[in-house]
Length: 109
Image 1 (cartoon, one colour):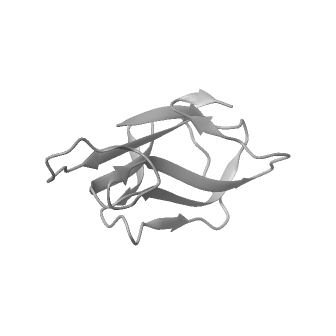
Image 2 (cartoon, rainbow, N blue to C red):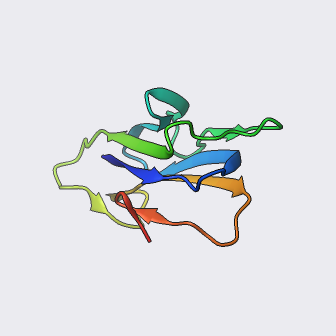
Image 3 (cartoon, helix red, strand yellow):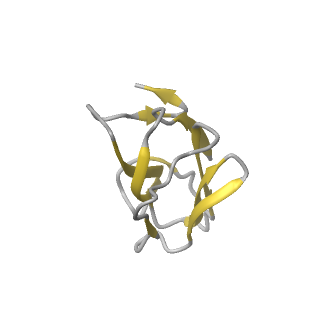
C-alpha cells in the first residue's frame, strides 16, 4: 500500500521516519525515483536526519509505501492494534511551517 503527498514549496526537512505495525516487511519514503529511507523493523523504524543543507523534495511530492506479510488466516485491516491491524505512515519535520500539514490516502487535509 502507499500513496503520494504534495510537500510544501520551499519546505526543508530535518527529520523523517515511518510508522507501521507488526506485519510490515518494509516501509519506504521516496522523492520521485530516489529512495529517502527504508525501514525493515517496524518496532524500531529508521529515522533519517539532515543538517544544513536540509532535505528538499525535488519532485514536490513525498511518496510512501509499505509491504506486508500476512501469515494469519484472517484479513488484516487498517487499525490501531500492532498485532492484528496495519497502517502505513511517513512523518517528517520541516521548516518554515506555519501549521501542521496532513495528507491521508494521497489527499491533503
